[in-house]
Length: 149
Image (cartoon, rainbow, N blue to C red; front, side, top):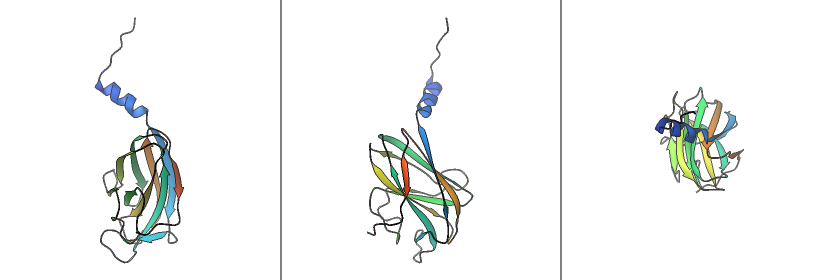
């Protein structure tokens, strides 16, 4: 008869395996939105606005992958490209490895939020991916318009 061994490590691994990963890839170019952040007032940063919809309630973690130093902001509703810090519920610069952002927060079922991805260097462009880990797949959509507060 086989013996079942359960400890905290195995329970932790089981919890991680319950999470689903969704990947979104894009490219910041000279045609991307421009925004202000880091107390800069000249629209010197390229950015992309992404709407993310959840299906299940739970904690979601968003990380960036790029050769460019990335910065991320999360909003429930309104934001302004004039100052990305206004109305942001979460923001991050380098919490993930290789100068990438990592954002973890709770999101209710069937909710949506806005993620703005930008760089840490003025007028820098390049390819990036955003990986969303959570209790279910999410849908992602690049949005070309924004609400100015």
